[in-house]
Amino acid sequence: LSIAYEKIGDVLVGQGSASEALGSYRDGLRIVERLVASSPANTQWQYAVSIFSKKIGQGLLSAGDDVQAMKSIQSALAVLKRLAAIDPANDKWGYELAVAQSRFGDALIASGDTDRGLAAYRDGFAITESLAANDPADSGLQRDLFAFWIKIGRVQLGRGQNVDALTSYREGLSIIRGLATRHPANEGWQRDLSVALENLGNALLAMGKVSDALKAQRDSVTTIGRVVAINP
Image (cartoon, rainbow, N blue to C red; front, top):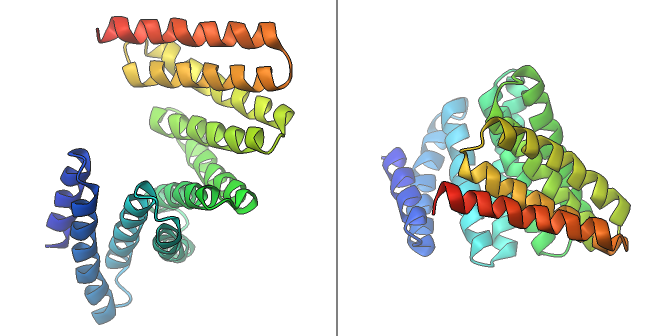
């Protein structure tokens, strides 16, 4: 039954019905929490608690409820950290822990806590980097590393750490450029490349490198043109 609630919630999110999705996720969470209470050693039910908590946190964050979002995501993190300690070789749990760290960082940044937010992003990046090292061919993990670099760079730029932001953006650009080059028909990665170039331009502009910033922004526009050509 809890799986049904999760699937219903996912469908509702896809339809833009975030508040209804939250209700479905909460119903599912109550079920798996009862299961965990009856069998605390069952790691699969604990994992289910973390997934529901994370999804509830994401929904609350999208709704602007940063405080409650942070509580839900912290609950997910606590469970996933315990599971990762039990079985460090479980890549599925490691991946979800990295995702939870990313969402926790989002909640912290939204609340204005950039120090802890940046630390959460770096923790998530470190986990993802380890997973990617074990499976270099996994393009999804490479894309996740790109996303972390962009998030880290945006925080750094917002804090006036322009040189650090430029370095982060270049790291992210290198990853997504490789993916977009190898998969020119992938619309999502072409869009990501455009975003990376735009962010690079923002950092260059903040450093007073106007001509370089203009080139990056023009490259971003050119890339969007390719996306339109893929899906007119």
